[in-house]
Amino acid sequence: GAGVSQSPSNKVTEKGKDVELRCDPISGHTALYWYRQSLGQGLEFLIYFQGNSAPDKSGLPSDRFSAERTGGSVSTLTIQRTQQEDSAVYLCASKSGQASETQYFGPGTRLLVL
Amino acid sequence: AQRVTQPEKLLSVFKGAPVELKCNYSYSGSPELFWYVQYSRQRLQLLLRHISRESIKGFTADLNKGETSFHLKKPFAQEEDSAMYYCALSNQAGTALIFGKGTTLSVSS
Image 1: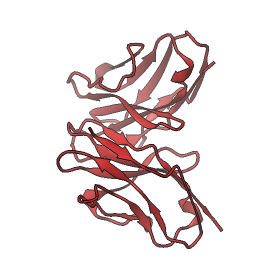
Image 2: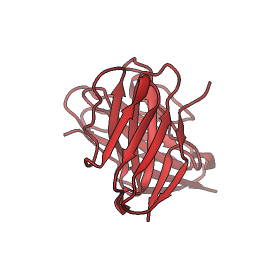
Image 3: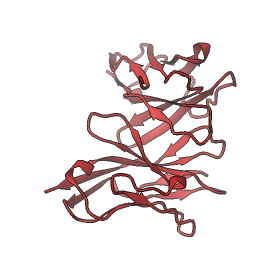
Image 4: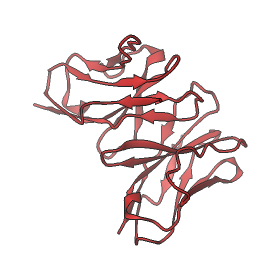
């Protein structure tokens, strides 16, 4: 079946602009995660959605970052007033609702802020 | 605090040599640990998890609670093992993975 998909695959923007990154999870997966992969920093957790519960936003680095998940499926990560330090690969992952299940990752969106 | 440490950024070995990628963790309680791998131009994927106690692609990892370690080992490295390897810990709420900074494994002939 289809895996997690993300769009765009690459995004170049100017400092100060807003960007939206999209994630389509695996059909039927109730849990969705966003991570950021930066050079030298590894992967950092950003936000977690589980069904209709309030999201866990504890990993968002600043209030310029927000995410929503509409209809329990597609998710959008928005970064407002982008800064050069936001340049990274943004990864989305999903898994079924079972706690012991594996997270499946998308290919990522590579964001470059000039 | 929950933390995963991978002390080596890069590990270079020759084909056929043993490999050990180090991972140490900080966690209160019973940890759930994973190794993820990212091959060139591919997405991040699960390699193995400690609760499965399995061997995948010849790799094994044993949880050592005394040393708070979960090192990844393979007795004979292959060139196709060259990739970025991440050790990860499930947070206490079970809502996210805490990743180490990763180790690049380079296997040359």
